[in-house]
Amino acid sequence: MKALNALRFVERSLLIFLFLSMVTLYFGSVVTREIGGTFASRFAWIEEAVRLMNLFMVFLALGLALERGKHVGIDTLRKKLSPAMQRIVLKVTDAAGLVFSIYLVWLGISLVQFVLRSHQVSPTLGIPMGLIYLAPVAGFALLGLRYALSLFGVIDRIHGPQVEREEN
Image (cartoon, rainbow, N blue to C red):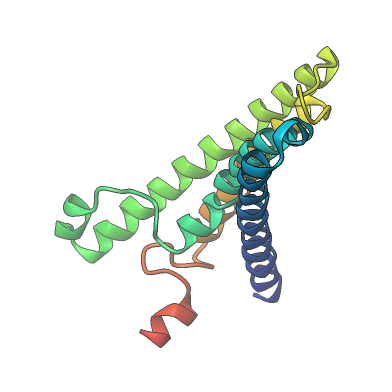
């Protein structure tokens, strides 16, 4: 559990860092455009950087959202099932989610390799475009990890982390 808590801390810290960086950069970009005149053109890279940060932030939050029970789901039918049947449906859903996540990670790695071989670079940042495609790879790897942990009973993704249930 210490490794999982460390992963949660790293994920949350990274998401907070990305969000605050996005806000700071975008605010600076707006201020620069308002008062900077021609000087503002030197900061055109900020728009692209913020878009990329947003992309990484969305994908990196997938695992945490699933673990906390924040993904959109239809639970009307599940709640009407018996507790034993609910567990079966949850395990089948976890297994399907794990397989789908693994497939998307495999597909994403192939895409990253393909784009890196094309030697494309982003227009204003000049970074290899293949690195941008690492966002879904990392996100679905974290999502697959959470599905696996739920499948094997390590986490309760319906009710969220144990710590949150005790505080409520």
